[in-house]
Image (cartoon, rainbow, N blue to C red):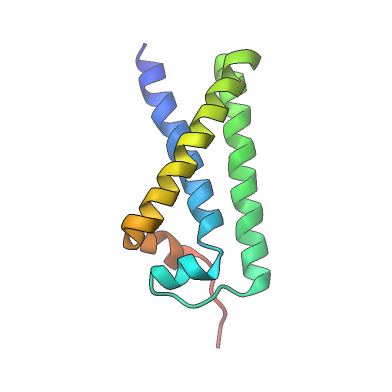
Length: 108
């Protein structure tokens, strides 16, 4: 029972991180957290990393819960975390400023 109590929030956190990374590659969201635009080459790498995190979450969910419920769990968490990222970016975007500062930035 405890493994479910730890696995579901961890999977949700992984998906939240992935979708927050995807959102923070867009200039309006970076401006909301007080940063400049991310260069195209860096944005591509961050988006690729976020995509890998989403696929990793799917693989973990299917491996932990099986094919049927794992995909259902993943789809439900994808929906929930995307809504949560949208809520955070519209209500308190500075909560994600630490993540935006971790992204690679161009060197002068």
